[in-house]
Length: 230
Image 1 (cartoon, rainbow, N blue to C red):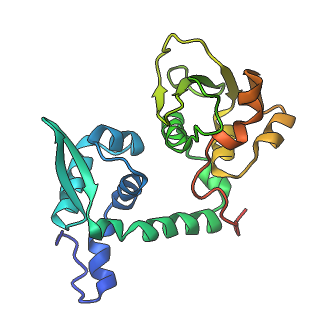
Image 2 (cartoon, rainbow, N blue to C red):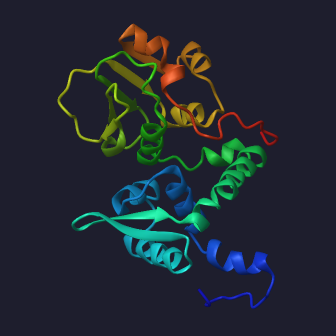
Image 3 (cartoon, rainbow, N blue to C red):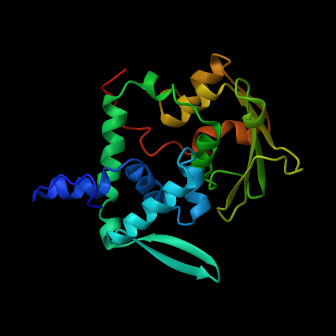
């Protein structure tokens, strides 16, 4: 962690040497959000190379922010230490600042269907769903063919699976829109009713799932932050 050192005794500078390397804050966001396994972390930072992810995890482990644990033979998990958990409000404050002060148009220039669906899977609230398995298909009409259709499968015990290959199950609800529309909804830039009224969001299937979509969708943790930028 000494490469590129600020060589200052100031604790801000010393913390920045650990936390401000490329991808580190974004990786910490995933760890704070609950991802612990390497493959899950990769899904949360899809543009980060596996080699760099491995190196950053080693750096965080060396800094005492993360500890590696073998949850079962051959399966490792990366868990936040006390020092790591103390970073949670800092990570949240980063997001709040970005939501308040960065123009939403800039945010919507960086669309990623897989990342959006991974975040939606994590935030989906199963409590308002029917007391049975619910299968919801999302189709993004403007996405490349290989990243156009996804399935969320939710069960009453709270588990939610994300599939990128047709699971072969009966679909309870079809959701169709542009990727930018769903990203804007999830981020809190737009609401479901407005998108439906403008015919930017199309729903077909189970009426209960349609009606309760705003409650079970589970928006970004920053969706209710009061914005200053446009």
